[in-house]
Length: 432
Image (cartoon, rainbow, N blue to C red; front, side, top):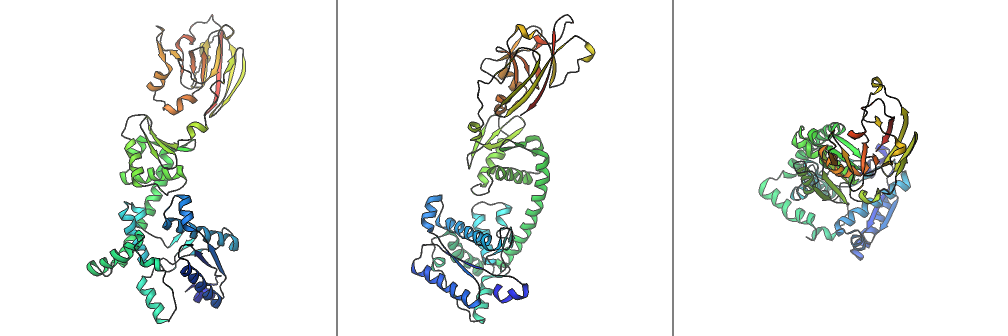
């Protein structure tokens, strides 16, 4: 068909044939048959040979999956080498029957709207020019025009799931239920495609509002998600998992459901996801990240910056970068405009052992005028700082006593109360 109309549409054709290394002489016969047609039609012919059984074993796939992987790898390679990466299209011959089979295949596996819409006519640089035709129409065209063709004998066996649907289930549906089932399923797929497009657009809007990047992962705000329709919640969770993984393969409804359930669990609960991903319940939502981040971003725990005089001090360790400016100051009640990153302390730093560091075992802070001590860990729990963020909170410490949890709270003992004592103004700039 493409050859017949290439002059009308002013298109250049290249034919790519994949030899899967499975069927021996019959596969060689098929390659020769296609090459002969291309020679007759004056179409450049490209043959790619793979050992699909070996590839399937290497990648842990079924032979069916490995064959598809090899085909599209060859298509993309040929396109890139002959047309440039951004030019041209990959035209494949899926038809309405393939669409119906794919819908059933995905339905039986528990797919959502995206899976149930089956095959689309255009996806990225892949086009399907005969998706509008049923297989019987193509066969009728072949018969009327007396065209020669070859049947791949593996399509007639029941070794693959798709073949079982094609050879057993679809004929029964057409004969016993509705002869127009394929056409009706195609119309349903079109409706589902429109629904999916709408949901995707809404998903993007809501994600911009309630999802934040965190390291190599994402954080989903629980309250924000709760106020969204449940159908869209699933889209958001699914898209977040895809975003962290960088792909959709092997992500199933089971994984999406397990992350959805986390929002109703206690803080610290985790679920494992494919590709070494973890989802963990935090106080305000769920964090999805690569588990290997825990090791790859480990900091040197011994890094300590001594604060022994006025001046500027730089701290750079792992995820935390900060600059602390220390200035001597005199008492003036009107200038004490404190915020999260600017404090005045009442002490002489020359007589204490002040250090800029992150947390250690045994750290505590004095929280009231009675001298009540609270473990740093308990303080973090009280103000709901997620467990995986606690190691990144920067501290100003005097031994195990925390003078200032930077960005959060000042130790009660170091608060300015007396105009006759030496004061220091502390200003910080912190990047987590």
